Image (cartoon, rainbow, N blue to C red; front, side):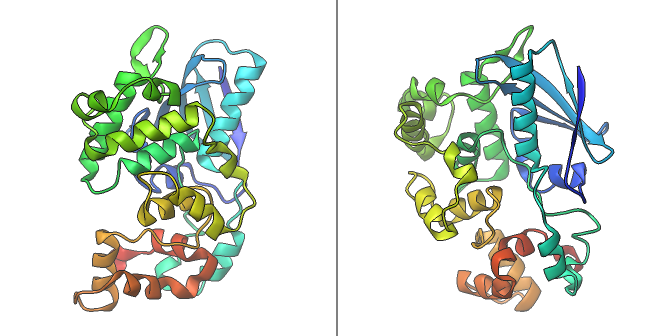
Length: 292
C-alpha cells in the first residue's frame, strides 16, 4: 500500500533525515543509496507495521507492508506527519536569517524541521541515551533496547518497534544495566517508563502544549535523567527554539568560530546566538560551521 503526504513548502525529505542523528537510531533504518528511511511502528491497537519513507513531490511517499484498516492508516499518517513536522512553518525563521551568510542556505535547503520519533516518550528515552557518552554508544544502547523490549513485526522478528513504556517498566534495573548495557541511565529509564505506564506522567500532551517555553522546560527538567542539555534538545524537537543545547562540541565550535580556538564557556556560546532570540537554537543547529 502506498500513499503520499503533503508538506508545507518549502520541504526537503533529505534535510529532515539529515537534520541530526535520529535516522541512525533504531527502529529507524536509513538506506543512503536509495534514500529511503524505514521505520517499524507500533500502533495504538498493538499492531506492528513496517513503513518505507522517501521523497515525493511536495511531501513524502509512504509505502506500507500489509493491509491496514482505516483507523490504522490514519494513525500511520499522524505518526509520519509528526515525525517530519509536515505542517511546520519556518517562513519567519527564513526572514530573520536571510542577511546572515552563515545561514544563507537554510531556505534553499528547506532546513528547520528536525526528524522526530512517533512519540515524545521515545524521544525522551533516546535523548537520555545521548548524554555523557559517545554517539556509537548511543546507537548501541538504542539498538539493544529495541531488540530486547520492542514488539516484533509479524513475519520478520528482526524488525521491531520501539518498546512501549510497559515493556520497559516490567523489566528491572539489573537487566537494563547488565544486558541492555545502559549504565547509569538504567534507573532513569526504568522510573520514566513506570511513571508513563501508570499514568503518573503524560509526555504526549506536551506535543501540543500551549505552555510558555520556560514552563515547558521546567516540566522536562522534572524528568529524572533530563538535564539542561537534554531539555534543550527536547525543546528543539517540540518546536521551541529558546534554549541552546550546549555541550562540549558547541563550546569547541564557538571557540573556533569567534575566539581563535581559545577556551570559552557555556555563557560564551549563549552570547554567540543571543541575537537570534526565539530562533537561536535553530540558528545554532543549522549554522554553517564548515564555512569557518
